[in-house]
Image 1 (tube, rainbow, N blue to C red):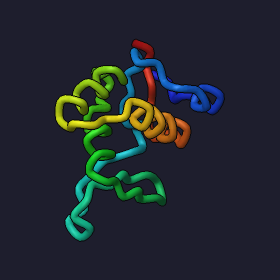
Image 2: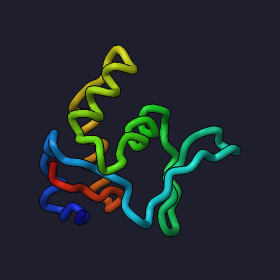
Image 3: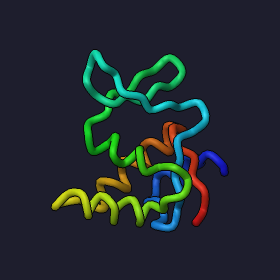
Length: 101
């Protein structure tokens, strides 16, 4: 798996792409904030519930399309483009590694 380069992050991720958290990124539950967080070197990102659900499925096995389908089964309204933008932004910040489906 390779980290996605900045040129690729400007475009939409392929539905067959398989995202996973980068090796230097950890997702954890913060008891103080009562929210999930992403821990990066020298940075903490506080996630909303949907963001945590998306990243929980980013295990290198699920494709982007499967992540959208799973979220659609859980929630009534899942906007495909918003999931793609969220994942693309995190890939651009090198929080995700992307493998081709």
